[in-house]
Amino acid sequence: MSEISIYNIGQIIGTHIAKKVNKPEKANQLSYGAELLIGGAVKTTILLVASIILGIVTEVILLVLVVAGMRALSGGAHCTAYYRCLIASVIIFVSIGYAIKIIYPLLSILSPAVLGGIIFLYIYLYWCYGPQAPVNKPFQNEAVEAAFRRHTLMAVLILSLVSIMLGVKSLISWIIVIGLLWQAFTLTNSGHKCIKFIDDWLDFEKDGGEKNV
Image 1: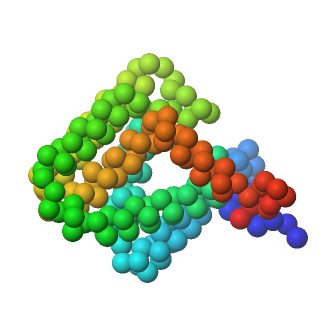
Image 2: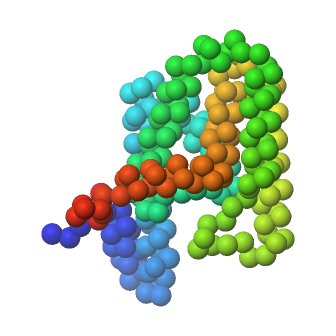
């Protein structure tokens, strides 16, 4: 029996649509778009279900918005296959969201200086390591890279100001800050090693494992 995967489903849908509109040359683009839509729906559904079960819907939704938005601007380490990205994203976002929920009572009584220190740390990391383009899609030129750098730092500063205005007693403030810190970490050498470790750990193709999950 043929392997069932998001990639294969996307290929089937994209090829079918291309035939329907009589544009076979668009099959690859349509297949890729279908794969992204299906994959996004699957990831969102799993994250929502896990968040509802653990009572961390606010934490996870805001984390995803912050990290995904910053990732689009700054780049960063990533897994090498979609299913590994899916599993890793769910594990990471749910783990961070649940951790924030558990330690929030402690975070809410910390000095504003601690919040400021974390903000200073990740601004430094974004400044030193961002932005990073994917290996297969490098920046077209230095001007494009400089534009991404400006937008990255601008977004970081705006979100940081929101967090500062909300203060240490705000759950939203800590979600923003921790989300920005995590994304900044994925830009560092240690962050790349961490994601690579997760990527290798989730590689079910090894030792005769199945190619697709």
